[in-house]
Image (cartoon, rainbow, N blue to C red; front, top):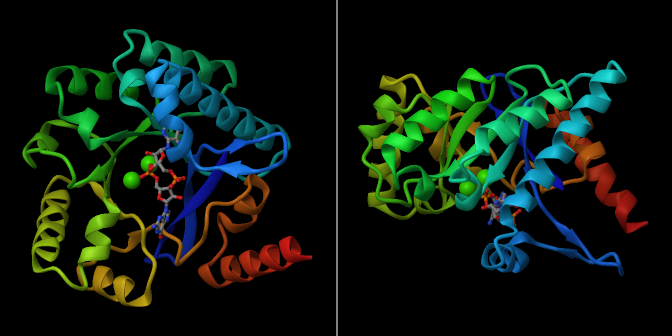
Length: 253
Ligand code: C2E
Ligand code: CA
Ligand code: CA
């Protein structure tokens, strides 16, 4: 898997990260998930893929813990099929235990479209996951048909505002209104909000204007190898920028 850091502009640090699956061919070509996830979904293999990534993330954290190195929370994506597996929570809990990962180092990202299919099931699953020490975030928020009031009952830790709103904030009044609404409601319910897909300084200015200071996107960092990620996590934005530039130079050589 590759990984992208999440930055907290209040502390000026890259603090957490998201694991994003990649397919590497025998020739060393890297294929993005949009190209192969639909095939895995069709063949009902997507749950195994999610679990595979999850195990890799756990193994990675375990190696760092064993080596006495600092660790940060890493989030994984789960598909709809995975989420509705009757043994989903148990499977993820068993893996977490097998690798002896302490609580709150693993976050599960569920997309808003899964989230609001079946609210009763969702609430139950979220509270079970939480009781097993997982953090939970709702991905692509704002794209589905969710009612904001569901969030009152859903004790997820983080709401990830979809990239489309971040792109829209500089041009589209509706997007600004929605962003504003989500932020206000999230503050009322004490949920953290992160903006995804941040690419430009103007977007950052606009987000900061609305006090949305937790951000993720290509402006800060591309998706990167685990080892590079670890150099970036826990460092300041300026240090991260230098590390990323150095790595790009190495790749060119
Ligand atoms: P996502 O979870 O919404 O992940 C964010 C996607 O946006 C990633 O694409 C990331 O590389 C990309 N991105 C990050 N910053 C920027 C930016 O500033 N601008 C733009 N335009 N894009 C940005 P990626 O890695 O290709 O993943 C695409 C989707 O594939 C993910 O969207 C997620 O839904 C899915 N996915 C990735 N890994 C997994 C996995 O392990 N399991 C499952 N079920 N789905 C996964
Ligand atoms: Ca995600
Ligand atoms: Ca997303």
